[in-house]
Amino acid sequence: MTETPLWERPVSYGAVGATKAPDLLGYPPAGYRPGIASARIGHGDARWEWATTAVLTWEVQRRSDLRVEVVEPPAAVTEGTYSPVGFDEEGTPVEPAVVDAAPTQYGPNGERLAVPGDTAVLQGRLGPLPVHGAVRVIYVLDEADERGFAYGTLAGHPVHAEYAFLVTRRPDGSVWLEVRSVWRPSNAFWALATPVLALAHRIAVQRFLRALTGPIPS
Image 1 (cartoon, helix red, strand yellow):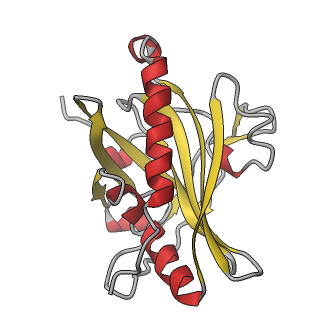
Image 2: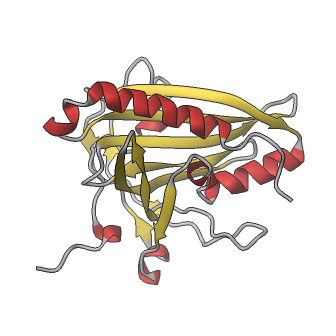
């Protein structure tokens, strides 16, 4: 039996786009743990331009000790549309919302920027154990003072989760990275390890927030 290609597999949770909710902390999807954390990563136009490109080329993950392998779908998919499941205010899945796929864009060094529908395999460690899981880019934000993207987990990941990585620029010129998340263990086995997963989540978020600090690479 032929295994379904990663780019064809659906996400493993119903509340797609949950990290966009303005009241995420107060009203997360049922059974999920919400989180919002942010850190100042610099100041000025140079930091803003570098950080927004870095976040859209998976540098936050790579600089947080994760190995990232982006699996690009066929051209017919990237040139078409991506239709994730939507959700209502109570977190109930609703009809898919069609999202026009954005044209392929590249950073100043030729890096391909993330677009909705992209799939990546993330590899890291949970203590002494190697772990890996596939994720799907759910949405991309490209506003005047806020850029970034969110991904959701596919089947086989230790958690059902969505993470958003957003770079924002404030009126005083300061640049911030915000990490928004909702997650829960993916099955009964991982539910037994919930305290370990919670600790790993906190450590990962701390690493994410530090990933874009320090000198801008030349």
